[in-house]
Amino acid sequence: MTIESILNNSKELAEKMRYHSDLPSKNILNFSKEAEDLRQYQYEHSIHITEKITPKLYRLFQLVSEKLFIPSNIVEGFVYASNDMQAECFSAHPENCAIRISSALIEKLTEKELGFVIGHEIGHFLLNHVRDLDQSTDHEGLIQKRAQEISSDRIGLWVCEDINIALSAIIKIVSGLRDEDLGRDKLSFMSQIKEVNKDFDRSHLSHPPFILRGRALFHFAISDFFKRNDVNYYDADQIKKIDNRIKRDQEEYIDNFSNYEINKLIENYSFWYVVKYTLQDKKLSKMEQSLIERKFGKQKLKGLINLLSEYSQSELNSFLTQKIKENKDRILDKVPKRFNIIENEIKEFCKENL
Ligand SMILES: [Zn+2]
Image (cartoon, rainbow, N blue to C red):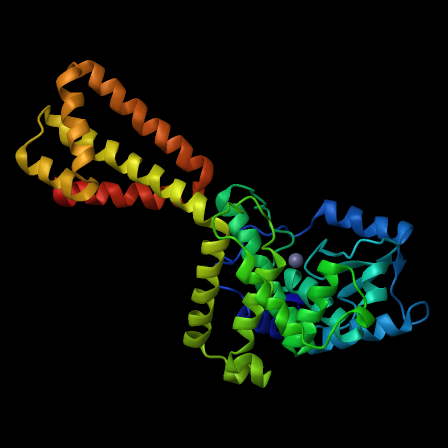
C-alpha cells in the first residue's frame, strides 16, 4: 500500500475541516531537507516520546493518531525543556510528521487539552501546510497562514471532542496558568471580544489573536458534523455558512484597514486603465464621460477633465502609463495572486463597455 492510500481516511477527514479561506497548497515538497535536519536535531537535543521513557505521552500520541485514522510510525513526538508554552510540527516527507512540545505545555495542560494541541499540529501535516513551497508573507500569504490555524484548530477540537477543553487549552496557553487558578466557565473567555477594538490594523499577524481563534472554534462547534463527531453528518452548506461568519470576523478585526487600502489601489488602477483605454482615439466622448462618472464618481471625472486641459498628448500618455504601473506594482506587492483576476476584470469591462 502506498503512503497516500495509508493516509487516505485521515486526509479525507482533515479536508472536511479545512476552513474555506485556507486554500489547498499547489507545490508540496516531496522531501524537505530543512525539516529532516530539524528532525535529526531533536534526537540530539530533545527527548523522543517512546513507550519506555514517556509512557503516558506515548499513549496519548497513539490515541490522537487513532482518532485521526493515522497508522503508527507516522507521527513522532519530542519534548524539550522550556517555560514557553509551545508546540510545532514539521514534516520531512509524506510518511513523516514530527511534533515537538515544550515541557511547560505538558506540565500545565491536561491529557485532553494536550490532545487538542497535538491534534492541531497533526492538522498542519494532514492539510499539507508543512512542506508547502509557498511560504509567502505578503497580504495574501498572511491571510493563508491565519486560515491554516483556523483549519488546524478544528482538527484539534475534533480530537478533544469538547469546546470547553479546547478553550481551556487556549486559556492556559495565553495565560500560562494551571488548573488550580482557573474557574470552570471557560466559555466566558469569549466575552473579552467586546473590548477588542476593530479600528486597528492586525494584518501583519501570522496567527489570528487567540480570542478570534476561540470564536472561530465556537462557530465550528455548533455544526452537526462536529456535534455528532461523525463524518456522515457533514453538511457542506452548513459549514460554508459557518466559514462565512468566521471570514467576516477575520476581516472586521484583522484586515479591515489593509482591505480598504487594497480596494483603493484596485480602484485607482482600474480608473487609470479605463482612462488610457478610452483615450486611445485621443477623445473623451460624452458617452465615455458618463460611463466614467457612473463607475468612478463625479470627482474623478472632474479631475480627469482638468488633467486633459493641462497636459499635452505625449505628456498625458507617459503620465497614464506611469499611474497604471505605480498602482499595479503596489497591488502586486500586496496581493500578487489576485492581480490577474483584477486585470482580467478591468479588461473585460473595457471590452464590453467601450
Ligand atoms: Zn498552528
